[in-house]
Image (cartoon, rainbow, N blue to C red):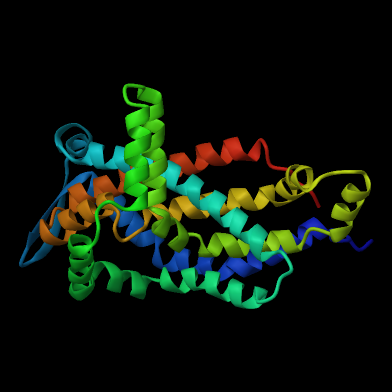
Length: 303
């Protein structure tokens, strides 16, 4: 029998599956059973007693309570989704242009890359917990806000622009959105460490001969950016977008997650909290699927 030759694409796919094999095994052995149990709880009334807990089927009562009765869940979910959209777009744009800068040749490039990689370390679970749960940090932040000058450059610029476009609904909303992104630049920078590394690895895989050929043909740097750089790293944009959505929905300061944890840990409403968690999960998966379908239409695939 003739030996079948394995192509480059097949080898890369095989290496990819080997790389994620520990995650797949961990998911199969440690996650499937809790997921099935939480799904079952979402359709039941969970009663806790000294004998343990018992579940009584109530069909869709928990989902109706979350979507039709609870006064906060729909509002928090809508605000979380809207914030995710513009925050994720800002993170992708910021990460891409920072990666472009770090890919240039200049003195101290290694130090600059190390500084931006600190965002990955600082956004780890332990330090984020210290940031959001440390009483001393919260008091220090409150003291700085009280003693500081409230008329910062950003506030003054916002007041001027809003005053000049007052009464114009669309422009007013646009400026409010713009200043929300500016005010959240710290969160955007903290959430962009992994994306910067991914974009940087993609930029380094682009052959310099492509830029040399484009320069010989008379292309400007701006044209090379949109004709070479963006198409070559477009598959990584899809990866970064999916990662950014998942990372945003799992943040420790997420109000929807806080409400779910409150119902589960403090109120001990396991059925209701499970229903909200599954709704939140399905919304997240729907957004990932829809955005991936849209982005995949404009992604340039190459071997």
